[in-house]
Length: 266
Image (cartoon, rainbow, N blue to C red; front, side):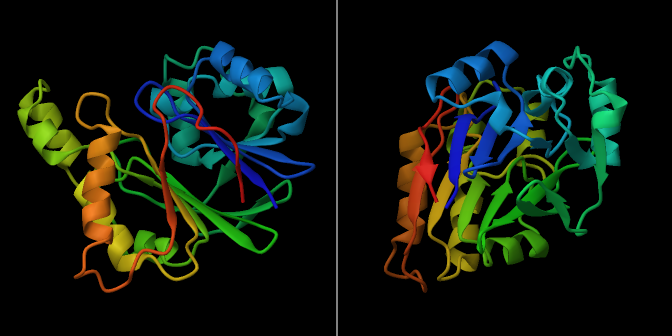
C-alpha cells in the first residue's frame, strides 16, 4: 500500500507526492517553498521521508521550488536533459539544482527512484520538453498526465494500463471561448501543444480506460476557464451516458487548485 497527496494543481502551482512506509517521491515542485513546508507540517510528513523528485516539464508552476528542495535536502531530481536545461534558464527558479543532484532520464527507458519503478513518456506541450510518468510500486501502477495538448497513442496505452490516474482537465470550451483571454492565448491553450479540455479528457477516459482502473484524479483546472462543477457535469455526462460502451467502474475526484485534497490510500 502507498499514499497519494496533491498539494496544489493548477497554474498557481503543481506538486504531488507518493509515500510508502519507507520512501517518498515528489512529482513536480511548483509551489512556493513555504507553502510546501506548511503542508508537510499540517499532514505530519517529514522531509526525511522524501528521497527523490521527478519533474514533468520546465514551466514555472511545476518547478518553482525544485532547486531549493534539492539543495536543502540533498534530493536527486530526475528529468529529461531538455527539462534540466530549461530549469537552469528559468528565472523563476532562483536556487538551481546542484549538478551532483541532477539525474538525466530518457523517455521510454525505465529507471528506479528509491522503491519506485518509473518510466517517462512523451506528452505534447509547448515547453522545452514534457513527460508523463508511469510509476509502479507493489504491483500497482500510478500514472500522471498533465499539460497535454492532445491524447497520443502512447498516452492512450498508458491510460488503459494503469490502476490509478492523474489526468488533466484544464478548460471548458465555452468558458474559454467567451472568457477574457486574448485570442492568441486561447489558440495556444486549444492547440495540440496546449492543454487538455474537459471534453477531450472525458473522451479519453471513455475510450481508453480499462477494467483495472480504480481511481482518477482530474488535475490542472484553469481558474479562469473552468470550474469543478462544470468538470463533474461534462465528464459525468460522457462517462455515464447510456451510449457509453464501457460503464464507469472507477472513482473520480477533482484536485483543488490551491490546497490539498487530503491523503488517498492506494
